[in-house]
Figure 1 (tube, rainbow, N blue to C red):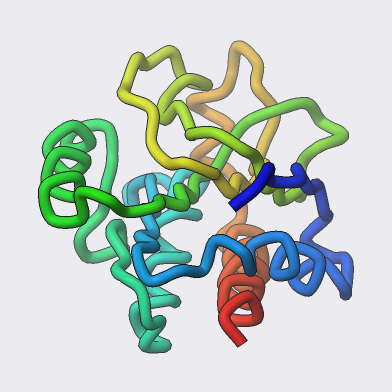
Figure 2 (cartoon, rainbow, N blue to C red; figure 1 turned 30 degrees about the vertical axis):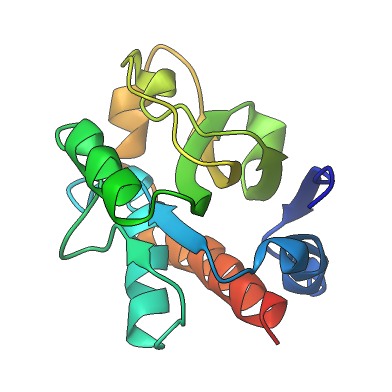
Length: 173
């Protein structure tokens, strides 16, 4: 498949979904699986499950794990990854998650080569997920991170999710 080009776009960029989709297109193969990580119990961490739910409701043609109703999160991650690996042993996985970074990066959606390390921003050690990853920077990483994650606006997370979903749909057309 070649080497992925890492991309950074801002969710408000009107061409952002197109830019992401062009770089995702080579990975949209028959063995693709999408894993959306996060929880609906915290707005700052619901980006993954929101993307999963929007994809599922729009009849996205690839297997999707992690929705608002059946999330993939810290408490069940190992079990879900084992299940996915058993059910799709030769799959190529795109992992999607919210992420913390610096103030200037908030609102950025990044396409990265390599896995996501869920929970890293809040000090958890969980297994890596994905062959490539899409992350949405939702807030800053600092000593108030846990409090900050609960004060993020749902509308902002929704906009990030819509751009990611739009880019995935454009990538298969």
